[in-house]
Image (tube, rainbow, N blue to C red; front, side, top):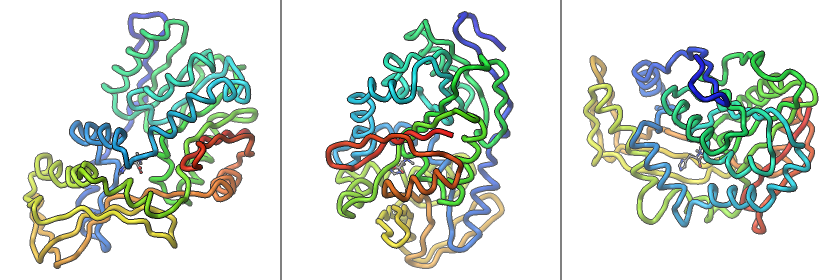
Length: 320
Ligand code: AVJ
């Protein structure tokens, strides 16, 4: 399982693929109805998310990028060079590029469940960073990660950008970070992008863009269920609804049934009353203090953090 360049290896942990049908049916039969946000990202969904990251209202991606770019040297000083860099859910491996020249890690371990995307992304990255040892690992990041292929003595640092942590319920976020802590071990670190609490108008706008790309992104879930699970959702009878739930500190995305209707998925019939919602995503926002407290519960110690001038977004560094 080693590809043809010397600086790249591919490790397959054979992650169990999600059962789209079972999870969708389960989510739709329970009240309140829901669909897990991980299913947004089919080819069309990933394309739409790409478009979201370029929207004027969606400050997250560009702000995090700015923070990483402007502070790359300082981040490298604080994190330390020559580390072994692990990225759970590395996707296209684009964000890590902002750090590699400054950080000069010895080894980079991109981890993703999507085998083909991982392979492509790792090959592209390796071509641009021939000095870097890339160990692409096809794994579900809830699976235990065996890093015995890596130099044992280098400091392990996890990189988890994009406020992906916002998709977890705070309790599962704590459990997930505890697992990360376990993987990086004593002396290890974690560099994580966390979206911050702010004026709700800014948050509401980021998930209700004027051009309706986020609405398309949300509705694409139903399109995907129609084409992959042989369902008959009428996309004109559901509307995108996103709002900041202030008491819970999260953006919620829903698809709202515009009328009383029945939808069929294989042998199942799901009846919606007018105004009934399918909850499709939570995106938690934290204050710096709240997130540090969460990371501390997971076993981390806050070391340093960076934000933009408007304190929209944070990149936080922790150690064990
Ligand atoms: C990829 C989970 C960070 O929560 O902002 C963007 C996903 N949803 N617009 C986010 C998303 C709607 C995004 N994350």
